Length: 115
Image (tube, rainbow, N blue to C red; front, side, top):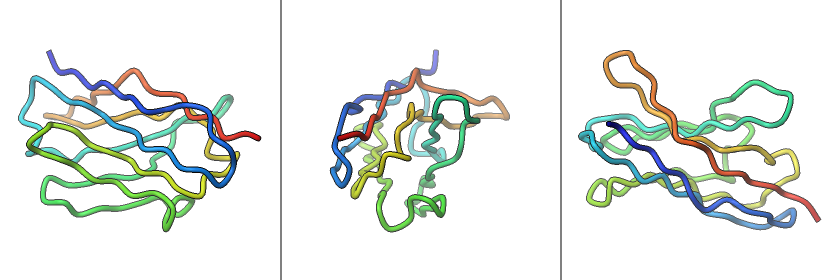
């Protein structure tokens, strides 16, 4: 059974940094585009960033220049480095991919940006 396990969330002050990790298992990780989404209270889940198997990346406008997505195919792990964090980045962050039309999600990790 496919597993996605996020970690690295926490409480950080505005302007601070965090690195999220998503450990994947039980599928051929290197073949798939991996995504990060986030969901703040009372809002819909929104796209944050993705990285293809070959390393091409794309970002939501709201995080461009502040967040960096990367992957280590040898470790079956995708990362989200977040810098210059703002209170509006507060959300639960989810790892996601789609295989044969079926979406898979991790359990999420909470990021809170507050002074």
